[in-house]
Image (cartoon, rainbow, N blue to C red; front, side, top):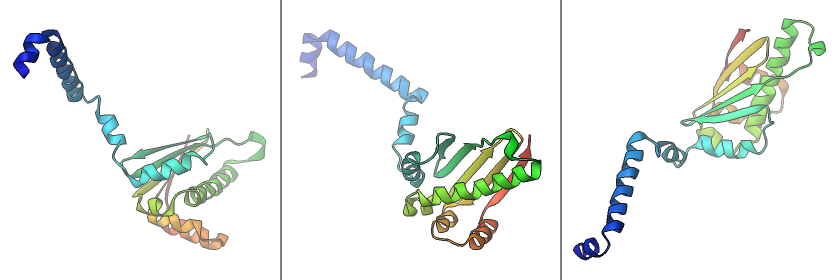
Length: 164
């Protein structure tokens, strides 16, 4: 059968062979790697799909394996904050509100299986990086008391800040 095809359609077979070589070269260079990674299901991707519909435009979210990374550009009017300490307090309050927003607007089972959640809030004067685990963050969706939220955040979120 192959010999009949070769004798009858040599150009077709040569084209098929060239296309196969071309595709294998693309595979070896890693062109299909990103597609392969996107096709692997993770809990982080499930969280991102639902969050993408509800987060503000100043947020950027991405998955790093099964870890969720959220970057937030914090914009505030210059006149509303008097000094650095009040800016710091406002940004920490915003961080707590953003973590609660993530917890409430994510599928609870997927967020619980997400390994690490990293939130980075950037302002022209200060940058705050917060890291927590999904199993701790999901509990924020059910806590109502401000004091309990504050204690839960102190116990489960690691924060690093840097002045610019």
